Image (cartoon, rainbow, N blue to C red; front, top):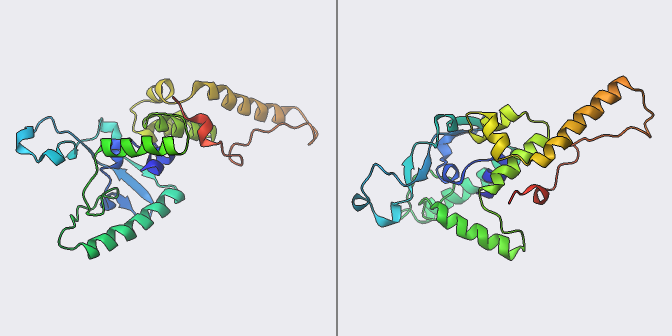
Length: 218
């Protein structure tokens, strides 16, 4: 769950709706097609109380439907989760719900956002980390992508935003924008002004990946 959020910038409602069939295991890509939540078009009396907030519904906006690359660390975790999924399906064949969800219970049933939020808060407390919101991790992801050279437009597409303005105004830590500008300025200066190796200043973010904890927005 957390890897999908902080590494790929997905919304929690999108993460709990991911199915293995949404993943291209050859190209290592994920297509976000749905989210899980409350379907306001349905009458609650027609639904099992346990499924109120776990209905398959359309994505937040049309631009939220997207195909994005899966980083190796997330891809490896998906493969491990698939092994657990198949083991649970074999062990609990009579009771297992083979619904194809990646993030599910040991019985194959989808979990609600609230379930994951509670465990996330407990994890933060146990590890003595700042009490941030789950949604803040999307901002962390956007900021780290920017620091590693991804354009605001590409970041917006990754997060499922229709415009990069939304991404910059609401998700990227603006204090880091000046750092990116400084990196570009240093590269320009290095190209036009000869420098000795001892005097050259570099800001190579690709070799010095930022500490995620420093960029959690709260």
